[in-house]
Image 1 (cartoon, rainbow, N blue to C red):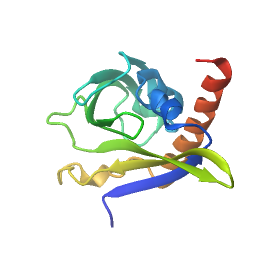
Image 2 (image 1 turned 90 degrees about the horizontal axis):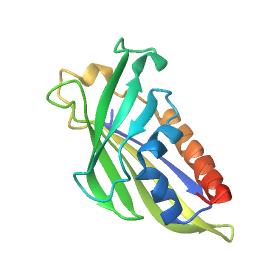
Image 3 (image 1 turned 180 degrees about the vertical axis):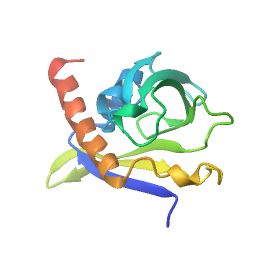
Length: 161
């Protein structure tokens, strides 16, 4: 069994439009397919070490009785319009050690310009204590989030946001 899941999707938008959603705290809430992310506070991230708060509701997932709680998203890789990854600094100390992220590659499909977006969910650094609950999300959830990301990017472009 692997300690990482990935999903990939072509989105008919440039990397800048997609990356703008991914570096926006509310963008994370907008594209969440699990229903756990309720709202976020903070400014758009711009560098490794930047943080923002996400208000969570684990009951939406219905798998682990944690209720409502807050986490800090901590950026650990950041290359504008190319890569963003983060780890979670939450109520459990030390942090569990799982990471999420996206890789963006400009591309073309059937003559249409856009971006290949790869979602990466990695729990290889998680301690044995927490391994039984991983993966929290499956590949279907990653693919669903990419579909929602596509929709959010198109809506923002249509509204001029």
